[in-house]
Image: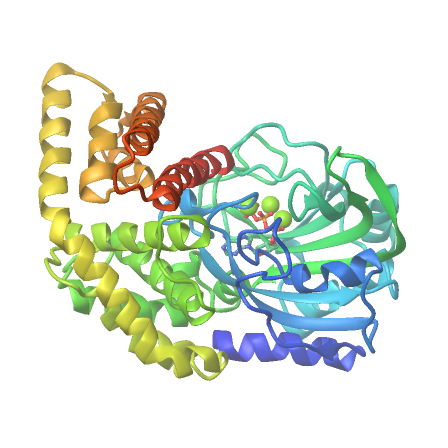
Length: 475
Ligand code: ATP
Ligand code: MG
Ligand code: MG
Ligand code: MG
């Protein structure tokens, strides 16, 4: 089954169970200032779950565009390092707004996976929230999954990718206990079942999360019961496609293979196994879909996240040998793969290419000099046996050469060193202070004062730093 057919099969299955097929919402949650980008299928239904909004249906199903590259759910640092994380992905979901609850949600999921998709039952593992006896009993007694494959998971134990089985959209909003379904890709792949010390591996991959929405979490962290318990589920299209296509990594599925070929063609990268090709295949999706939804590269907020993703992509292309704008040339390949499911891509094709090309030209003008500085620093570090990249140099790269901190960190990670982010922040703060002082001086001297611009400059830096911190905090 091709991924496009899997998407259809999912929607049709839930339609046959009385669900309304609803279109994906934009990646930019205009109505929700608490959210950077749409990161789950439930986002567009947030107010329905909270009881503020009513729809003519109580069951819905969607294939939702998601970006997890900032904010509470940030997978940017996982891309290229795990088999299962993207910045942009499609989340297949079914939703109950005060209609069915745990029992039906679980039995629909099981029916789709084992009867429609015909997955072998013994390869499926399940987790439930530690205190959720109800879900545990449904799985073990009603569905009949052997108890050794149903695992109770409590709060996050601190592992990098550990599940905690209590889903929250963000720091506030609807949330509740969940039950997750995992697929065992086989013992030739490293990793252990969820909850085990080796769960960070990629052998057992989470394919589907069923969230039982029971609470609304407020700013103080207090959980208020929702008017009607509801269901919100999310299954990564790329992950279920990998399972159904008999491959392990998401990057091996039909859709990604076409994009990886396009990346190789545009960078003349000979090594088809290079992680950089996967990063490019991932990033072209995130960047194109974000631009299609109206985000443009900039120095703050959403635009700055987009700029960072584009620059990371360019750096990976540079590593593969590209010396001039190339990234935008992958857009037609993406449109070929996803344009019929998402017409906004096809409609925006020219504009997406133009925006990317302009951003590329800008960055290609400084990348050569910036990379020379990085390489000189890394060589000096190696000679001295140092493992921490100098923060002032990282700041100079940011300030003069347009290398965002996370980009320098991305290069460093490949060489097994880290960046001194504290010193970077200090350099940023010093520059901000100088900018402010210069503004005051101008004002005092009654020179050609451009107050708003001076203020704006400081704000930009602050925002930028906020984003970087958020990126690291959530990574
Ligand atoms: P993981 O533990 O693997 O990071 P998650 O628990 O953070 O996943 P959820 O928030 O439960 O993911 O999202 C629901 C589903 O969306 C997941 O079960 C998975 O199939 C898919 N998914 C989540 N994050 C990503 C991602 N970055 N790339 C691709 N698919 C994803
Ligand atoms: Mg995650
Ligand atoms: Mg998880
Ligand atoms: Mg999950």
